[in-house]
Image (cartoon, rainbow, N blue to C red; front, top):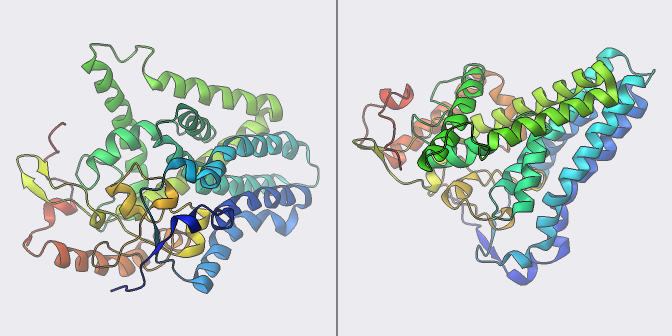
Length: 385
């Protein structure tokens, strides 16, 4: 059990020096351009930095057991909010300037260009989609629009509908495609979630309109905005870089989506809410998401790894997300950079994580003796609410 959880005073939290580490994502922008300008071995810098360097820094700097006051007003969090707001225009100019430059760069081979945009996709997935996740949870319309722009840049706009209307409501139940099942390898999870999350997102928006006696094709359906924004991104990529630019745009988008779903996979693997009967499930608690408070990767991921608290209190902004002792939430052994790499090797993943899931079941649900329906997601769908 952890005994080092401490509270950060508000006077300390509001300091720009406290917020500054969360701005380190900006350092990836010059790294991307360095790779484009010099080519060669530098094209590998982006994935190496985001996965391996941050994993090494986590090992060096350890975990952060401090919690900020969750009642801190938004106007005290200016420097934290600013980095998520500024990232959308930064990513836009980075992505499309590279789409214009790279196809005409004679020193870059076709292989170099693909690997470079694979690295760009690591940025737009690791940072861009993550920041869009923070922004889409806010009530401010400008922030929600920034979320839509970031998702359109990776052709995954429906993630907003799926995440807000389906995932948070039904996490840990058979109705949530994103909750990875016990013993389900990532390579099975990935195609399943790609199809099911799109269908569930569209179905959720259709149901929202039906409650107002409106058809799915009413212009109030956000999917029309999603499709328009994505089409504009594709057209712009073609205008700036031709067919090569369009292809490179798709490479980065595909990489970003893969990065997102890798994270989705590890966030809830094997964790389910108890079925209470008649389609009713217990309320979401911190124990239904994997927690990780590794310091440096949380700087890059703006505390996304404090996922147990995010699902417990989804309206909290990232600076005030809480971490928990292992008696209150299950803990990942490493931060997301390491865990996503482990997830790509299913036998290794099962060796690391299956014992932890079984321990979690014994700790929280000793009365449940048959987990077969939970493992296969064949429990009844939760009642509509």
